[in-house]
Length: 88
Image (cartoon, rainbow, N blue to C red; front, top):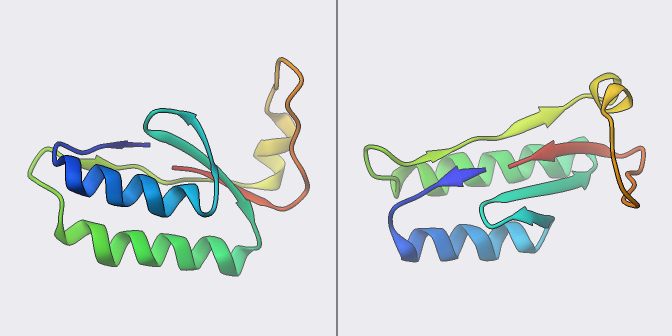
């Protein structure tokens, strides 16, 4: 999830995240993938976007382990697979 004041930076991050995940809300994305992919995404976000953030801007990355995911309650028709998982 993110809270970014600069529209250009918001749009750039949104476009990047859409390549790998699904928007749950306007600024919240879920991404499933192998650990190597998730590490690459984290690296790309922290190196590129950290330089573009204003003082009060934030990007929060929540890696979710399989044990936590197995305890997560999903309501509705959505599902998840056994790949690694994170919410941004």
